[in-house]
Image (cartoon, rainbow, N blue to C red; front, side, top):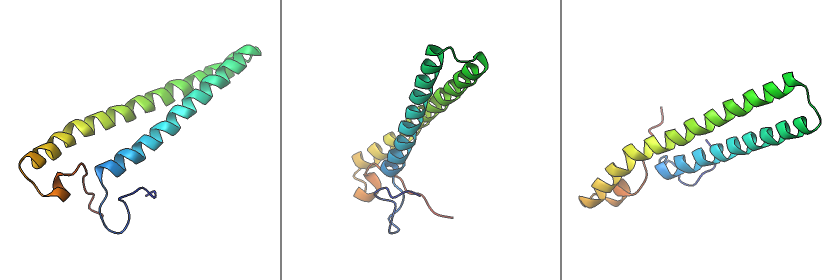
Length: 107
């Protein structure tokens, strides 16, 4: 587990921490896709081989799909989680439950 706020000291793994870590992974994934797109453009500019260019294109497609799936995961998780947290808050639930977070039980 990375050094994200809310993940140390037995305080639980919050939704906010998960979302931050997931966002970091998605940023790296997007940067990888951009780098591959630049690589493809530079290969095209110098007349790169079709086999290499096809492989790069395949990596771009795979990276883009991974990025899309990650974004869908965040959207689906938020759609399930946020209404529950809001309902707890409206019902006067305890702050540690109603705050926008969720706990992961180790083991």
